[in-house]
Length: 385
Image 1: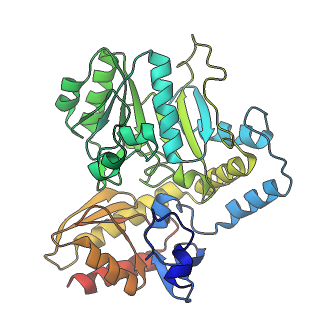
Image 2: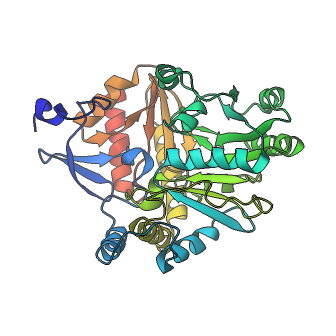
């Protein structure tokens, strides 16, 4: 497919130079010319259970084949099973869930729920944050190149320094509805929250009757070596955002919150999503949860992540400034521009993701094999020599 035919009717918001990927299996993808690649992009963190996961595919096909569309207002056994299993993995004594179709939508819902539950309007987010591109999520996103073309954004949003609780303390007040954080900042360069920081954030939020939202859209579904990255920490949120890998490739977003959040409010009809909670998405989500348990995916991810990080740290090069991350969510911060390295890796059959001018992000499917990880390291070793 030539570039002209690819871009003739497209919006122009995406790069015309991306690979034409036509097939995927596990941690591998193939382009339209038959070239094979080890995928360390993973659909920006979507493909945790692997490309073309058979369990997920079968669940979606089975549901779709017996499917007359109904919104989430109509109960269904599949949705009930999905949410019941998901509730076992949440940090709340009792959980409530709102289903949508993407990470940005899950964040939008979280921001609305925080304002609705508290009656307050101010939202505080972290510098380097990325929460999505819709107006609410974008208002909580830090990077100016995403924000400035669409300003003015929503009012009453402000930012504080990540992992600096004293910065939050200076910004928060009695009118703050919520603090929203990524447990691991992905787009911002894979920066992990510190235990002491999150504990202090929880304390500051409690002192100000402010809700804590943790965005696990990229770090969730076993990516960190736990089902939710927040499980690595003692502090508990009031609202959790999930999406990306939760559907195994099928679009899904989910906002989980403490069951007591709206005990004294009649919220019926105040928020909705036409496609949120559709049955193929719920079937996909249930299949993902079952696959994660059956394959002990969290533990395998922890082991593979430790191996990959250790091997990357051994690379004999002066071109790397730092290796950081958790599980199979890793960043290689370079002393040189990342773009050239990304292009050379693609030529060598490895796909990686640039994050900023000098950072490479690795988000491979969690089913990637040790041999495939060794190949990634060897290709990096050769290119960075």
